[in-house]
Each structure stands twice: as C-alpha cells, then as structure tokens.
Length: 281
Image (cartoon, rainbow, N blue to C red; front, side):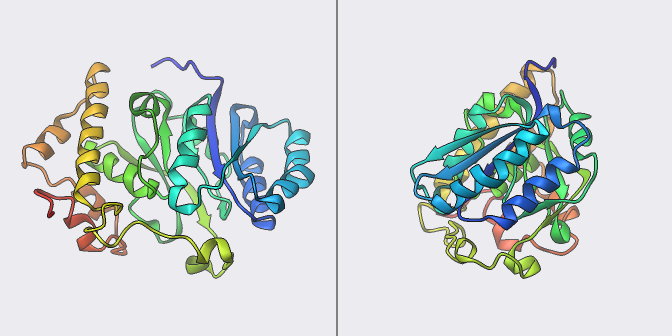
C-alpha cells in the first residue's frame, strides 16, 4: 500500500497540568528519533489548563521550534480522563501520517531509532506494540495504521483505548510486538507522577453490569461489529482473515496469543473470559 501521508508517524499526546514530565516525554521521543522530519506531534490541552498551556508556550514550543519539529496544539473543552478517547479520536483525525502513535505525558522513550523500527512496517495492517513496564500483553501505547482510522473513523469509541484496540488486534490476529522499549513513568509502576491527574482518573472497567463498562454486552457487540468492518477492509486488500472467521465460528480461541504474550499474568482471567463465546448479560 503506497503512502499518501506527509509524515511517517503522528504522536497523539493529550496532557493536562504536567510540566517536567511533559518535557522529559517529548525530549525523549524526539532525541531518540533517527528521522525527526518524518514525525508529527499533536497535543491536546484543556481550555482551562493555564499551567499546561503556559508551560507549552514558554518551554515545549520553543524547543520544538528550535528542533524544527512539526506539531500542533489543539484546545478542547475539558472532557476529563473519562472521555480520553474523544481527545485521541479528534487528534487522530487531524494526523497526516502512516502510523498514529498514542503517547502519554508520563512515558519515556528508551530505544534509539524507534521511528525507523515503526516505519519499517509501513504498508502492513497491524497494531504494533512496544515493550513497556512488565511487558503487558496489550499494546499499552497503541501504534495504529492510518487505514484503521480511515475504516472506522476513530481509534476507539470507549475510554479504555489500549484495551479496545489490543483486543481487536488479537481478535483479528494483527498484533505484533516490536523491539522498542518504553518506560511508563506512572505512580503505580515507578512511584513517580503521583499527582492529582493520576489519582483522579476514573476507569470504566470492572463492573460489566454498568452500561459504560468496557465488558458490558453493548461494548462487546460493538467490538465485534468493528472487527467485521476491519476484516472487510483486510479482504479488500487481499489480507488473510481466516483467524477472525474461525473466532466467529467458535473454532478458534482468540486469546491464545494474548496468553502467550502475558508471562506475568497481567490480564486476569475474568477480564478476557467475558469476551469469549457468548457474553453474559
């Protein structure tokens, strides 16, 4: 598939109220890139976040300008962590790149040349996954091909973006771990960034009877529908969808590769059991 994008990779970076960690994050990802001219960074700020916006204009923006990095800062009405996917979906639609990389202001890139590793997969219809703390089997920082967004019109309709995209990747058998390492400098993982942003982040997961919960029947059915749409695109490109067809026919355990990628048992059995076979109401 021939690239029609201006950039190779677009970094999606929602941020609020963080200064030092945002500096570390942006500097790490750009200083460890081999070809920064092929990277676009899209920031999301809340309109009431004067701390974040002021820091961006006085510190981050001048540094990016000096480096000649392509970037855009988008101001949103405050949506909160509970609507994180809406920030990301809006940024993804603005992206002009072959790959869209969901990044965090508490993430630090550890691998030099990470951008070339991602670019080597351009033209492939896969969800790429970096190595993060404890090697979670999900793509904690999903790297998504442009065609995925063009097909669905969004990255995720649900707040828990990494779970949503990763489960689809396993259902379609298009998940691939790449040799890129990232430190997620989050309070429960490293003890750092234990701030108000971290402590007040609601998660719509853990109560399948709640219609907003990731494992509720409505969202299960939405994931299945979206996988069918993605599979239709794959067929149009001559890509193999036999795994997905066997999953739908009940002939293939969709999570066998997830378990192989989970040496530390980070996906508790009930998290995925709800999405196997007939879901409970």
